[in-house]
Each structure stands twice: as structure tokens, then as C-alpha cells.
Length: 272
Image (cartoon, rainbow, N blue to C red; front, side, top):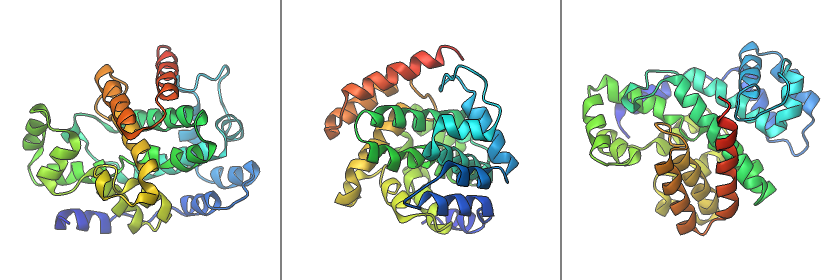
């Protein structure tokens, strides 16, 4: 691994106590909303993020969400956990994303679209898969904050952008410039923070599925489709939707409900 990348990962601040408590809560077999509310209400940033996301067009709730309790009730426990952990992780990693031609708000929007699409698609396919993949769908691109920082600090931003403009995929350009891809870096960050093995395993080989353990291939392929459709540089564009559908078809995944979920999400976004 690039020494600069290793240094940046090892120098990351520890996860806040609230997030450690939420992660422990997430791994419990039985979860009660009021227990999650008690944890969430101790962190003003998480409450603010929950309310902002709950009131966005992608959810289309009929009335304004003004309390954490109502947000949890409407979003559900696992979705709330995803937003809480995701918002905090992105805040800890926050850096200049200019190498990708986006900013932190663009990144957050694409991540929220990804986790929403995952939920909408997999609700019709498998409840267990939905519960497993809502969080990794939100977090799988987190490694881009480290890679963008490394690309910028090593003076390789223009080289990286030229590779992208030449037709290289983001993962191909990342690999060529830094020797690593987003999914590898994200997994390394989560190992550093000692997050759950399952979260790490389904993300680590999204950019190199041939190396993925057979136990995690199906989940990793789903994440690859979501990552493609909700590409951070142009989420839900016609081109990226077509690429995502093509991947889902090639992987033998359920395409009918994916198409329906994409159309439903696009309709919601017309209100933005």
C-alpha cells in the first residue's frame, strides 16, 4: 500500500463514543427504537443529519420531520443507523474532493441516493439482503476522501482527471495513479476503526470482484451495481443507469425491481 495512504489512515481520529455505541447496538439481534433514540439524542450532529436527510426529496415524506424520534419512526432502525454512522464517518474524513470534480455535499447526496436505492430495490428482493447492505451502500465510497487527499498532496490531480477524461473508469484511474482503489481504502479505514468484519468483507472487493470470497460475491455484486448507478460524479445519469443495469444483468441479479426502484427514485427527485 502507498505509504502516504497508510499514514493518512493511521492518523485518522478515533470514532466518537456515540458511533461506537451505535455500532454495538447495530450488531444486537434484538433492537428497540427507543434505545437507539437515547444514543442518537446525545449527538447534535447526528440529529441534524437525520433531520436534513429525512426532509430531503428522496424520501418524500408528507410532513416536515422535526424530531429525531419521528425520523427514526419514519426511516426505520437500520436506515437511521446508516445515516448516523455515514454522516459521522464522512464528517471525520471530510477533505477536498476536487480530484473527482465534486464537493462534500455532492458526495453526501450520492451516498444517500445509493442507500435509498438499495433499500427500495432490495425491499422487493430480500429483507435480509436489504438489512445487510443499506449501511455498506452508504459507506462504500468513503475511501475517496483519503484517495482525493493523496492525489492532491502528490500533485497528481491533473493526471487523474486526464485519465478519467480519456475513458478510464474511476477505479482504473485510482489504481493507476495511487496503486489502490476506493473499495480497498474504505475496507482499510474500517479495519483501522475496528468496524464489523461483514461490513469490511462486502466492500473490500467491489472494485475487483474476481478476488472476492464466494461467501460475499452476491452482496459485493449488488454494491457494485449501486455504486455504478449512483456514481458520485453523476448519480442516476442515463449512462450510469444503463451501465448499472448491464452489470446487474451480467451478474444474474434481479433487474425488474431495480428498474422500478430507479424510476421511483427519479420521480421523487423531480421535487428537488
